[in-house]
Image (tube, rainbow, N blue to C red):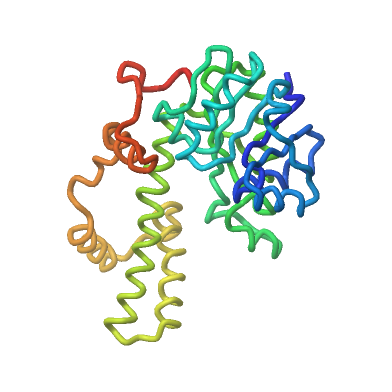
Length: 293
């Protein structure tokens, strides 16, 4: 199996342009669809033609929605009824799929694929690799994807497209939609991105309170971010006894005792509902794995 014709909806957006740049270098037949005039111009400026999705959607085997999460429900309501039977709808984030916002149709397959971004431990050899923090240009990254209704041949065909979209890619990790939602937002946004912004705030507070120069504070922080990750995740060298005392002090004064509740599924429901600006997710309580997606 292979996808003969692909529609990329939202081709002129931030993520749409990143994906388009890679798809355009492949042999895949891709239709670049965009409604916003400014975004359409970005597509044309990149040397690609803009196609009205209404003109080609009925012939496409794969429809990729590179649009914001909060409009995925509305966009899927408009497009899914017009997709040809047996086609696949691919979204780039799990929130809308997990929340049950995508328009459902029995003849359509549903999948999600989200980039992991290049690892902090990735060995980089070129300037382009060092410059590519986001991924999709030069630095290798993995992708986490959910295609629960797909058989092995369908997953393999979709993986080929995913590898092009987010290239260069080393691994496509198949998970469920629920598991992907635990990865993002819970693990990487609720925790990791929060910690990143917290460290930035701590840097500002250090400079303000102590009077140390920003250059000295940044040098100390950036170096210790690397060593802290290396020790914690790779056991490259143990933390000293004094450092362990400081770590415990930090946990006592910064973390709440019940912080791990964020991994309870009702908390996952709550944060995704807030992200999507809806009152609640429409998850079937009897089917937490969301086997239809």
